[in-house]
Length: 491
Image 1 (cartoon, helix red, strand yellow):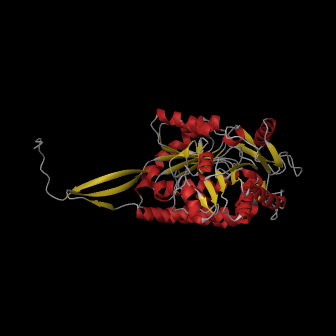
Image 2 (cartoon, helix red, strand yellow; image 1 turned 90 degrees about the vertical axis):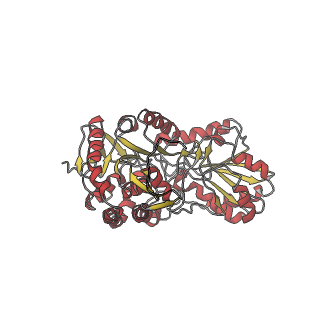
Image 3 (cartoon, one colour; image 1 turned 135 degrees about the vertical axis):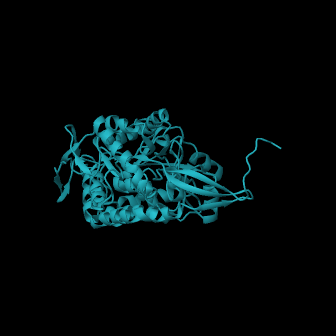
């Protein structure tokens, strides 16, 4: 068993995989670099086909005993898992800020408590799964949710801890075993999760961690025919490849993908509130799939709204995400920053007008200034494609029909925001084709509610019963109410 560890801002981190209850090293490694200042944080073990085989084998062998436990018997393990995360709240906040460039204050006060809840809520909700009964005149149907088997979980770099636990919670609670593939650009909190699983006493093989690139480690994992489910959050291009690969083995996939969500400001909106909420779209440097990045503003109020938004954005603090005053941090990777910059440059070259931002921020190499573009056409690339950076677009509309057409006029359908008189906003929301839409608010989430998108924004829903419908095989045990007499007669 490998016991190699390195230090990141006073936090001890293992660079190795976690397979069958122990740390496993690799001869191949990749660099982990902080987006804050390009500091080399450590060399991380890179998984090959042998590591993937070992992890899936371990999960397969552990599955029967873990699945045989009742939800009540699994709950104490998961409570200890959540408690182990909670005891490391400060450590998780420090580590993910250094590794992914996310705001440390948001990690400490929002993400870590939510990560704990992702484990405990689903563990409790699993207690309600069994013994659902459907009564018919002929029979009693006992509906069971049986664990599916080995689950591959693949998470992105923009919120590694929250999104990993969001999937791990229901997967483990429903009796599956897990192989987590950490994001290559931000792997460290996934490694810390493995420490928590070990401390919680999860049986060997119930939780496994693999690290490495998508083309090598990820590809080997999703190609394994022993998987029962694949849960992925990430890009549309990667999701297409995963779906095609999984189809060869008929493995069901849950795909939570990108967004190009509309932020609609009606003529009867509270413009101060709308502007303050619109500025939140720059949070996490715009690297949030559910952000409302397309501002669709009624023409009658657009000039006033723009000035109110300009005032709020002008007060945003761009800087080191470890500083409590910072509101906008760095872009995760230089390749991503160049991608963001390319979108803006092509838009301006194509006739878009830059209202503010548009360039790299002078705070550091991987910082991009909050940006707003207008004078755009619906078919423009920057209106149609997800940028995943601190870049918003603004278009105006004159009627409800026009704004609904604009909102629905992309290949994405994840989220949305609508500000206006509540009844008016709800009427608009009912016509927008999307997985969810917030009325006069943003970011309100509940684990009991469904989350997911339509069109290129994904397949399936996560949260509440929807998570368990995916991670379980639903079985109908049919008990007749009258003595059954077998007969070939159709009369």
